[in-house]
Length: 190
Image (cartoon, rainbow, N blue to C red; front, side, top):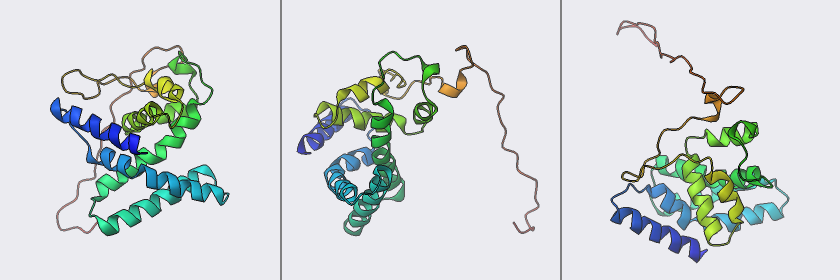
């Protein structure tokens, strides 16, 4: 697990040197991964299913950590998402061949691709693959669908999500939805 921390710290230094954004939640998720893994294994040995074991381990780690260090909720929420995505990304890539067309992915795989924090979860998964904690094949499978990065800013280049594709792979244009709120005078209660 020290190898993961070293990898994350080195990657953080490189991003700072290139003046790219760094998300502290990603760094914290890496620093606490060893503790989370131990707690998750303990729950798995008690015959708790994998997803529940991960949730329980997340709760324990975050509860123990926020007692010692003040971490904003927006960061703990993202840490939890990165952690919870790990088993899902591993499970959904298991046994899948590279080069599967986007339209042939399962609904669960498409759902993961459309997740707002898919890229953070994938980057974390790939770091785990680089240190040999998991097979790098899961990383390779998901990388082929990951949004490209802008070389200067490091930001994700907008790509089409799985639901943007029709039956034969063509892009489907969806009408823009407007958020319309009823007009209320200032004196009326909600």
